[in-house]
Image (cartoon, rainbow, N blue to C red; front, side):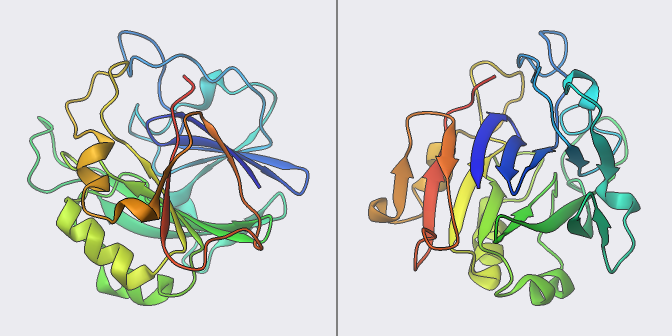
Amino acid sequence: MKITFYAHASFRLEAEGLTVITDPYTPGPKASGFDPIDEPADLVIMSSATDAFHSDPSHVRGSPTVINALELPPEGMAVRGLHIRSFPAMESYTFDFGRDPDANALYLFTLGGIRVLHMGDIGNPVAPAHLDALHGNVDLLFALAGAHATIALDDLDAAIAAIRPRAIIPMHCYSPRGVLNILPVDDFLARYPSGSITRLGGPQLELTPESLPPTLHIYVLEQSR
């Protein structure tokens, strides 16, 4: 599987002749601050349909199938040959959005033989029932690592320990290109041994089931948008 980090919580995943884009943001200086994706995809998965930082597929080219993870049935659903299961969650109950917190979802799918969990925009500890269902069933975790307005780092550590992914790619961290006041990735990385961290120095990573690390490893990608 080829992974490309666009920005914030948006990635491009390519394997088995299928291209998937996760949580596309609204581009531009009056919105996220990030550049448009401007590339085609077969499938776009969004953790909700109400958050401009996670749910704007308008700048994805082609004619992708767009899925709101919150609308999936509890047992999941196959879309374009990809089975997707969602785990409903909420934005932070304590962060002041100037409005009530919205629902969103973590979502799990397998592509290229790798079980991928995207954390959406969860703002609270992961529910125990979700942790039980995800334990031992995730190879690659896209982890919300910027804290403010999303899951606290202590709660993220607890979720990682319970889920036990083999690889993590941090996302939703501070970017000088962005507009959000969230933590830089280094705050998350400081909680883990330096030997378990690889900084790729670019936006792409390729993983196969055979190349997955035997124990937890964190891959830091540079955003491309």
